Amino acid sequence: MSTTRSDRAISWYNAQPPGRRLWLMVLGIVAALGVLSMLLPAPAPVAKSAKTADEQAKAVQTNASNVSKPASPATAAVALTSDASALSEVKPGQDGKAVKTISVPVASVNPPATAEATPNVNTAAHAAVAAAPVAKSGAADVASGVRPSKAWRDPANSEQKSGSTAVLAAAPSASAQAPAGAPSNNAERPMKAVASKMKIQEIKSPGGITAWLVEEHSVPLLALRFAFEGGNSQDPAGKEGIANFITAMMDEGAGDLDAAKFQERAEELALRMAFQDSRDELYGSFDTLSVNRDPALDMLRMALTKPRFDKDAVERIKKQLLANLAYSAKNPQRVAGNSWSRAAFPEHVYGRPTDGTTESIASITSEDLEAYRRNVFARDTLKVVAVGDIDAKTLGEVLDRVFGELPAKATLAAVDQTGPKPKKKLTIVDMDVPQSVVQFGLPGLARKDPDFMAAYVMNHILGGGGFASRLTEQVREKRGLAYSVYSYLQPYRKAALFAGGVATKNESVKESIDVIRAELKRMADEGPTQKELDAAKSYLTGSFALRFDTNSKIASQLLGLMVEDMGIDYVDKRNALVDAVTMDDVKRAAKRILKVDDLFITVVGKPKGLSSTN
Image (cartoon, rainbow, N blue to C red; front, top):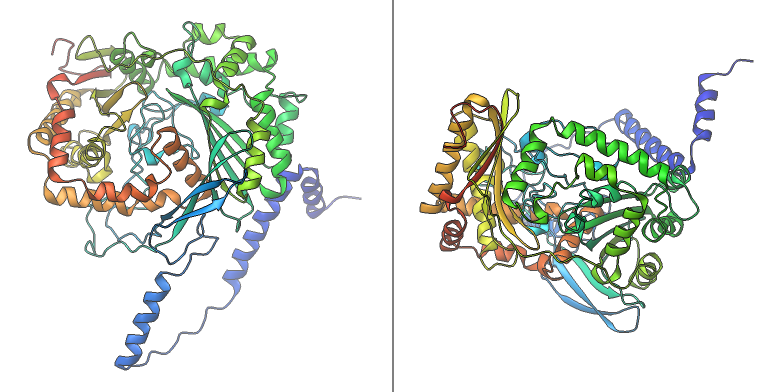
């Protein structure tokens, strides 16, 4: 008896793991609701009628009151209230002591209509060069020669574009917001915000682990984000790339589960777990459905405390990493990023290639990976944020359960304070490609420097604001020299940079660099116009709420704040700090940073009319 298509479909569905069946069922329900909505008749139009003055006044009053109503759980990751003020509360914690609670205004943004949208302003987007295919999260590639941020690792709170994670904090996606100052059909229409509160609790577990918590019980999901101090600055000499290597190994078996069984179990539980290295930290991401929370957390605990590092898994991942390195050697973006870092920090760990070298990756063993884990994965440098369906008491228990078996103290090699110390102003790496890649930089400002926020606003105007930035206007719009040009601020723990890049045809490299130099000098000499400053501040404050519209984004934002030690109330203060930036502040920051005579540049390609003697 032959089987029908429906029989085969049912058999295929039943053969799937429970986690996948759950997601398939959810997708099926969503699709059915979509079809049903299309089949239902549209509501009949309501006949218009003239309103009296009293009726119109009542309508306006009703609309005004509706603005402050809470957003539905389906459209917000935090509960919204009509209270626009930032209030402080005190709640009992796990150990009976008071915990800090900050009530933060969060805006639901209605952006103005614009004639042209802006792309997401990050290094990878601007470089617009395809990266190598990557089989593991720990072996990611990026156009700038540095590793990109995952969706869960988006430290927009840091008001920076990370050179190690390729993120521009201030730049939401194109679909979310157009740049300040972009052409608009109704440019004068203000962004409308629904004031609300996001309560950030600081708790301490019975075992002494501190975490920040945002409770949101309307959606049965939990997002955990955590970080350990260290990152690839802790790669031992000769073992460069080990931090990157270990991020690719964290789901390759743990406890009594080998790689295949571990990944099968993770799929059954529908959990998401990933790891990412940067210069100074190693980040972890974990998401689970509430119904699977306990067994899913056991998987995370095993991955952190009992990874197997089986030799067959190590060799398999090693081959993937070596294949990526072979590709990177032919990718001008990757070569430019590594060459520029090496030139900027010639005798410092920040100058090492984050993904290692062919020789260093080939030499890494299971024992090396375990030694790195034991040295770096420790409770004293651990930062944790939880957002979602969990309360403070339960989170305290979870923290000790998941992280309690880690060593009490990390064993970290000292990293010296430094700054960019290039031995020459221009480095050209010959590569037979039709388009050259240019990266440039200068010393920057530390994250807690009093002028950092002014520098952040300045950079948005200069090269961080997408199509609204001066560099884009001069290099792309007016002269057509490149599709994309950008700049960013990168404060590491032990150094700070102002940097940027452009990719253009070989014949246009010199002109592009000359234009960039001129714009940096103009900003240093004259500063921005008042219109540019006002537009930048309006955009940066208005788009800030877009960073907090999902559990995952909230968790990533708050983790960045913890790592940078900005304080639990920074989210509440941040827009006021932007608004407080004056013209004098921006001019002062520009003069401090944009010393064009000190600009150091790396070019990969075959630039015309340019040599190291220029």
